[in-house]
Image (cartoon, rainbow, N blue to C red; front, side, top):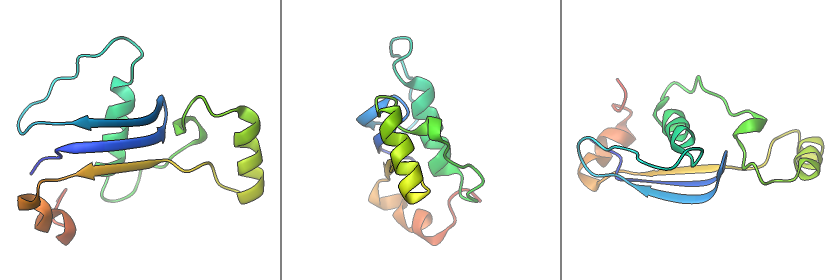
Length: 103
């Protein structure tokens, strides 16, 4: 099984980003400070099937104003919303949805 695509929204340095993967080994070659580590952190959040990883305030899009983040935290008790959406080819979908992924 492999993840063919990930859509990242409001996560770390990514306001909105879509990255496609090929089956097999993929190599990330991007400029310095362009989001390689942030992409790996997003994938780690998705692959942590036991839910032990948690988001912190530093995991949200960096260009959000501090005032907005403070307002949102105060109003809702929660940080702003980020989303991570992996795409898995249909052939592997039964494994992902059955909970067998990651065992």
